[in-house]
Amino acid sequence: MSMSNDSTSADKLGAVTNQLTNQNIYERIYGAISERQLLPGTKLSEERLASAFHVSRTRIREVLFRLSQELIVELQPNRGAFIASPTREDMRDVFQVRQALERGVVTDLCGAPPRPSIVVLHRHLSEEAQARAQGDRTALAKLTGDFHLRLAEATGNRLFADNLRRLIALTGLIITQYGALDSSACADHEHGDIVKAIECGNGEEAARLMREHLQHVEDSIKAPKDPDREIDFERIFGLAQPGHIRKKGTSLTGSKGDISILG
Image (cartoon, rainbow, N blue to C red):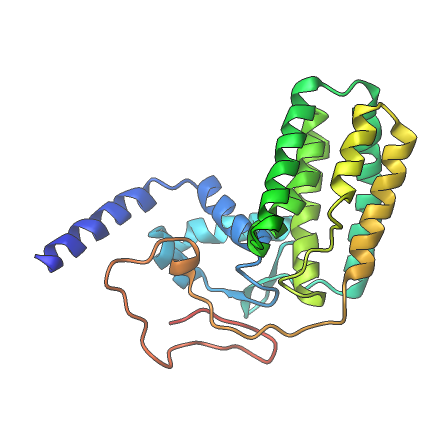
């Protein structure tokens, strides 16, 4: 009976994954990177990803190419795809662009802050406070990054939002590469102070607060770290089949500094 149930569950899983579009797959991989489930240097095997998502390697290759265009994945000749490992120079570049972009975002919002957007921002601040009170560092890390995206979305300017989305993902990789995984660089009050300045329509103050906030984040990033853990794509993407047991000792590691998935 249990074998029959497992078979039925597997069939349902296959039906769901077969309906996934390239955009769905992109969003799942992107989300796992943004939420630091996939660390810098992780090898993204086309074969294993295709198996996890129940799609062809061609489709996985298309998604990985798209991620490489956004500098989140590195495609290395004769080696494959890896989660990007940002350098110190990359970190400076990312924060330099974020400083210019996000000061423009908050200044734009101060011109005539739409009431619905203010409500959304306050709701988001409440979610941050709840995650902080519960000690949910994973949720807090995601929410603190999403706050900046909510600001960009509130402007109604798609270019603000699309470009900041990429920069936030790169920032997540940088924090993972050089900072502590379980730390939040955002002081409790900083996001709230920025929202207050926007509500008051004070563009100069909002820009100043954003500049200082992003500088605090950049200054909090520490020395390089070399993450070392086994990666299970099926678990990360919620695609593990019932009764699936990984064979002991089947992890595939590349050269030093690379992390590969379980075989």
